[in-house]
Structures are given as structure tokens and as C-alpha cells.
Amino acid sequence: MGKSTFAGTTRGRVIKTLLGFGVAMALVGLLVAGVGWERTLSRLRTARPGWVLLACLSTVLCLGAWTKTWQAVLSAAGVSVPYRKLIVTFFAATFANYVTPMGQAGGEPFIAYVLSRDTEATYEQSLASVVTADLIRLLPFFTVGGVGLGYLLFTAQVSGVIERFAIVLVSLAIALPFATVVGWRFRERFRNGVLWVLGPFARRTSRLSLASARDRIDRLYGSLEVIATAPRALVVAVAFGYVGWVLFAIPLYFSGLAIGTPVSVLLVCFVVPVTVIAGSAPLPGGLAAIEGTLVALLTALTALSTADALAVTTIYRLTSYWFVVLLGGLAALWVVRRA
Image 1 (tube, rainbow, N blue to C red):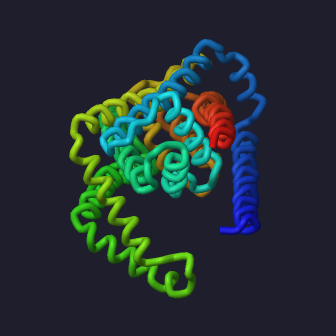
Image 2 (cartoon, one colour; image 1 turned 135 degrees about the vertical axis):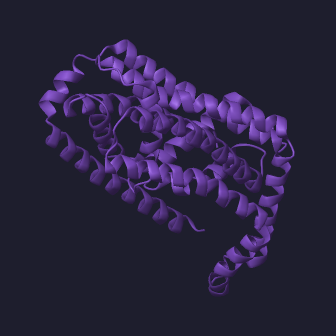
Image 3 (cartoon, helix red, strand yellow; image 1 turned 90 degrees about the vertical axis):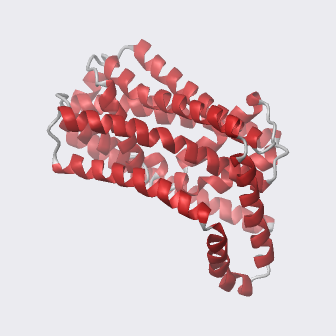
């Protein structure tokens, strides 16, 4: 790829990201205007800094735990990376996911590219480790979300909207593991299907080779098979995955305590997985979608007013999203500098 093409592609992505942020912030502004910014600000002024700092610390520790998950998976693939180096790469990759529209949907190839450039791992090993680590981090999503859902169904009267969210959560809990097993069981057919889709493009450009694509897919599956033969490392990865999820969810609890309106820990177990689903909206970091969902859920499932719910949501997003964007941006600059 030439420099001009690369520059044009990068410029296009930057423009799309800025437009995404513009749309998201406009929607957040409408949400704040609808709730009442004066009442929300008055509640935010009462926030206790200690709980806010604890929420920020929990977010950092969460990313640190998920880095350990990644490191354990890489060690299963035979790749040794110092933790102090890998954590910077993970922060940078998280930053890329958080600022790019649909970043979570298409971030794995980028993260694998960064890792392969930053370590001795091949691209296929990097991609296999990223995919495996993502799957491992989905386990707590379902179990923690299931615990929260069970608590909600047994202790509260749920509305039609909440029921639909519950149905989505349960459906994902069934569909995603099933799709993963089927995809692995019939991996040869999956590979052939990918090559069939790529065929028309390969015939029109010399930049894409079906033989090269087939080789990359085979090496990816080979790396996944190597990882699967190291159960001890996978147990460590799963353990850190669960620790990371607890640390990922608890800032919402701390945010409630910050303004003196506690949110039940078990309710947090349900609400946070639902916000992850809402975060799949095509906006950077799920902006506006997550805020709107959180405000709606907190007001529907607790005694919080909309102003209190928005104040809790604001603190939560400042400590779990914007704080990560700041740290991840610094990490991304460091990764670019040392590359």
C-alpha cells in the first residue's frame, strides 16, 4: 500500500471517527437537556471524590487483569511477552476500540496487527490469542449477567422493555457459545466459505491471493489448536477474565455511592452486561446508546430520579470510558513512538 493510499485511508478513518463523536455528543446533549442539566449538575457537585477515585482505580485494575488473560493465552501459544510491555499494548488497543465506531466489532485484526508488530508473535498467533481472549472474557458476561438477571426476575416487576433485554441476554448466552462450537467443529467448511466469498475479489486484484488467504486461515486454526492444548494456561486466563469483569462492573456501584444513591451489586450484575449489548451501536464507545440505556434502566429498576440516574451514569462513564480513552491515548502514542 502506497503512502498516499495509506494517508488517505487514515484521513478517512479520522473523519469518520470525528463525525461519530459529533453525532454521539449531540445525542448525549439531547439526553441531558431532556433530563435537566441543572438538576444533574447539582447532584454531580455533591459527588464524593474518594468513590470516584476508587471507580477509576477499578477500571485500571480491570484492564490490568484482562492483560493477564491475554498474556496467559499468548503463553499457551508459545509466545512470551513481558507484562509491562503487553499492558501498554493492551491499553493502546482498547483506546482504538473505544474511539472507533463499531470498534468492538472490527478491532481484533487491528489489535493482532499491533501485537505482531510489537512482539515476536506472528500475525496469526496474535489474532488467535486475541480471539481466544475475547471468547474467554465472554464467559463472565453470561454468568455474571445471568446472576443479575435471576435476581431481577425474582425480586422486581419487570417491564416489557426489560423483558426484551433479558431475552437478548439469554439468547446471546445460548447463541454465541453454540456458534463458536459449530464454527470450530466445521472449520474446514468455514474456511472454504471464506475463500468462496473472497474469490471474486481475488480475481479482480493482485493484492489478494486465495492461496495466501488459505495459508493464513490454516495457520490461524493451527495457533488456536496449540492454545487449546494448554489447559493450565487457559484456566489462568479464565480466572483473570472473571476478575476483570468484576472490576469492570463495580465502578457503576461506586458511582452510585459517590452521590449517596447506592445501586444494588446484583442489579449492577444485570445492568452492566446490558450496557455492553447497547454499546454495539455504531457510535464510538457506544456513546449515547450506553448513557440512554443506563438512565432508562436505573430509573425503571430503582427509586432513582432521572437526574440522579444521569448523575450516576455520568460518573460511571467518566471513570470507565473517558478515563480509559485518556490513558489509552497516551499508551497509543507510546506504542507508536517505540514502534
